[in-house]
View 1 (cartoon, rainbow, N blue to C red):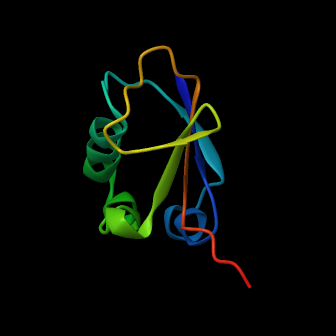
View 2: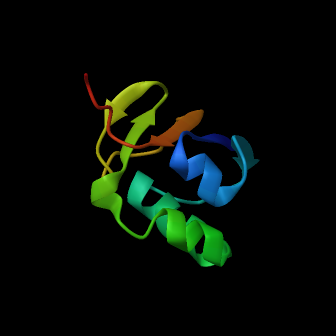
Length: 82
């Protein structure tokens, strides 16, 4: 089981702040593909990965990052400064 957290517009599109899912995904990209296959709202949220950042166990990483042993994956838009 892994906790998946959604922030900002990702949360708005999916309609959940977080969920606990069972996955066989080896990488973050595999997890995204599993989520996109669930429902259209996930497909829309993950349609442009260049507009997303990801953290595994609170460490910023890439979509090819392995999920072995991970407890949490968070998806959020890039941070903008001001």
